[in-house]
Image 1: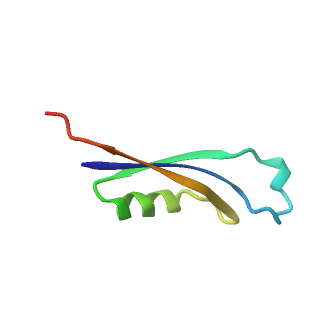
Image 2: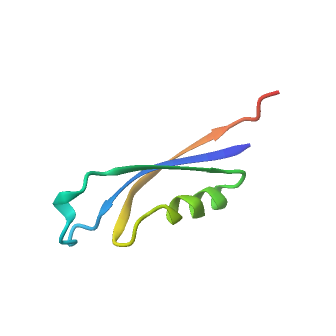
Length: 62
């Protein structure tokens, strides 16, 4: 099974460039939930935060 995580990220509310950036959609997938979460966190730029995480699971196709 593969875990797919999707989230949006944007600068923190108190960041000086908060209004200059739109949300950025991020996606990660791995064989474990923890692996996918680490991958997702690794994509978040410094000073940005994740705005919730949606989790999907994909069954291997036969």
